[in-house]
Image (cartoon, rainbow, N blue to C red; front, side):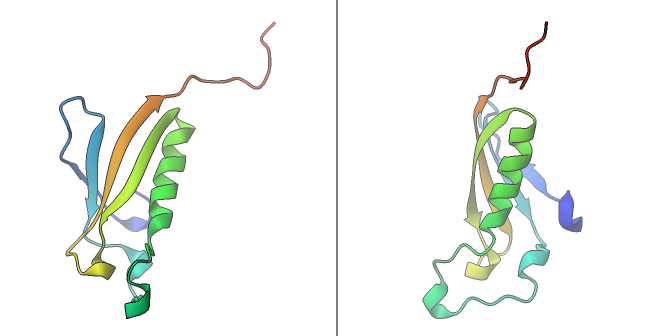
Length: 96
């Protein structure tokens, strides 16, 4: 994966449309501490956007959300992913 980290995919649902991605190290938070007044801040929300954008490039629309965050006291960083749809490929030009 990007940033030199390894992710573990687990907790697939029966339809294989939802899962959890967890990683024990996240270089984005190595030197970060959230002050008390900013505990509701999702500092690593950019990870959700990166994964969502990458999957959109291969025609998959997904929802990605942070479930566990070490900045908020959890042991590992965990994202939940849900497949919304496989998007139809759109070509920007007409084939004649």
